[in-house]
Image (cartoon, rainbow, N blue to C red; front, top):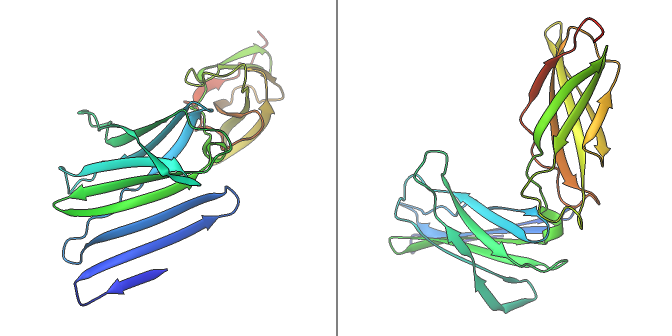
Length: 242
C-alpha cells in the first residue's frame, strides 16, 4: 500500500510484507523530505539461545553519524504495554558497526512487535517487525571443530555446541556436516545429517585429496534456522594406512 502527498513535499511509504511460512510480518514506514530523506533502519532479529537471548541489530548509518534511535517492543495483542529495548551502540573498532537491541524474557508462542525509530535533525523513520521466538531461532555456529583420520579412508569429525546456547539440556541441538573438495577444477560438496551426537565417523573418502569440513547447529525440533557454518577445517586423508 502506498500513499503520497506531493503538495507538501513529503512522501510516506508503507510497505507490508506477509510471509506465511514463518508467520512473520515486516512493516516498513518512512517519512522525510524529498530533498534529503532519512532511510529506515534495516533491522534483523534472531534468537541465539532459545528462549532467553533475543537480539535485533541494524547497521550504523554512514551519512547520519548523530542519528538517535528509539527502540520499543510489545506483545502484538497487548500493544498498550510497551517496553523499551536495551540499546548498545556500535563500538569504536571497524568490525563493530551495528547497533544492538537486547530483548530479555520474551514469552514462548507469543507474537511481538518491535519498533526501531531513527531520529535525525527533526526527521524520523521507523522499521516495525513482528515475530515469534519460534520463527527466529538461530544458534551461533558450533565451535572447536576437529577432523582427524582414524585409518585408511576414514575420518573422525568432532565439534562442541555453541557456548552461547545456554539451555542445551532442555532444548537440545542437532547438527549438519558439509564437506567440500575440488575435482578437475569443479567444486563439489556433500551435506550430511542431521546428527544428535557431536562425533561422526565418515567413510569412503579419497586418500590424498584435501577436504574442507564445516558444521552447523539447529534446535532439535527444527525451530527457526540452522546456524551459520562453523569455520572451515581442512584435512587431507593419508594415502597409507595409519
